[in-house]
Image (spheres, rainbow, N blue to C red):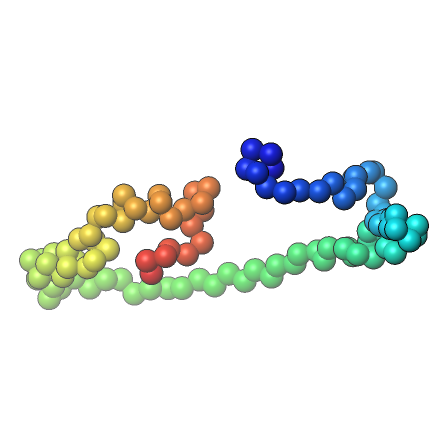
Length: 104
């Protein structure tokens, strides 16, 4: 805070006791005096139901496909033809995990 010239105030101290107490020196009382489990409660357990489904795909039928036309169509796709995403994708990630690309 000192380096960034940010104002701060010490409002208390953390102890091992799982109890929150706020002391008001003006009125000499404790307006807040409660156990932390009342404030935070117990965190719910995460449950996941996983169902796996198998999909049977038909085999690719290659008869009737012109190689030159297929090659041209594949190279026209932006994902295949445009390679700048390889350079900029690192700029949009945090700790290597990308939640959603900004350019989508």
